[in-house]
Length: 173
Figure 1 (cartoon, rainbow, N blue to C red):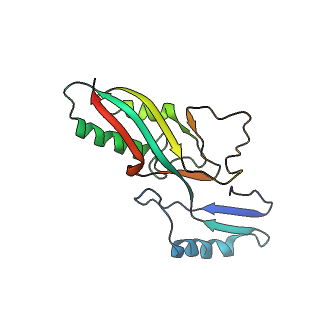
Figure 2 (cartoon, rainbow, N blue to C red):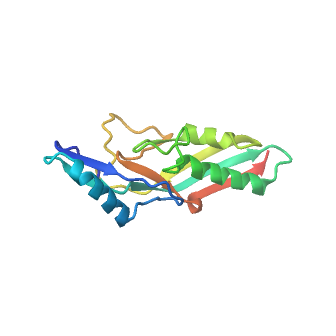
Figure 3 (cartoon, rainbow, N blue to C red):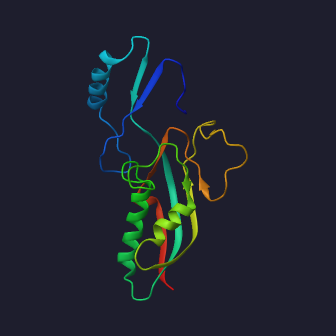
């Protein structure tokens, strides 16, 4: 479910700088943050401290044409890592400072990411799929259909991409 706006309620989402596709705070970390904030909050403020919610990216696929002479195995590894880094909750996003919460995945940004890998000449046929979300979770307030070159991320969620979800066909042109 989407995060709910309520008067007098504050929700703090804790995203630890950890490795892995879905960094999560421990119960002890959440408790320590709560214990520190509790005496500092207004008595009328309802405080919620949680870990992030993730939207599973179930597939990223594309065809990639490399310049002649490029080692396809090395290039493939670089492409996989570039995509994982771009969508990572902590080190991803447009500036490498973390994926913005609820930010949609633009195919154009992923094309740019792959084209920035040394030796890549062309990328085409990009497809991004995500796991189904609860009814209403994708209600972003936009009118009309979501463009075909956008994978929507519900408000308050972060994408989670694992290496196993990436399927690239890398070849020489």
